[in-house]
Image 1 (cartoon, one colour):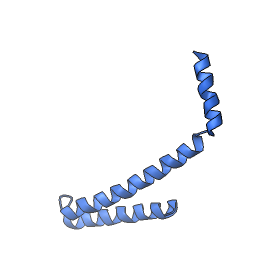
Image 2: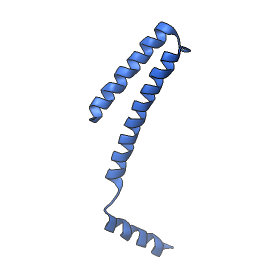
Image 3: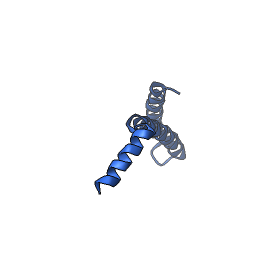
Image 4: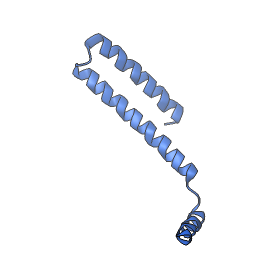
Length: 75
């Protein structure tokens, strides 16, 4: 699933949740179930964003080893 597709799914699920909550009230079990579905999508989105940022910020292993050596030597 592409990021844009995931964002679209999140928005669609959010709208479904709002409509359902307005129809049946916040305490209805169906609202809780729909909310949990939205939570899963948001967690996927968060995981994707975190892993993407992490990949962008981690230097290649040789550079990381050099940085570790620099840190050790600086103490």
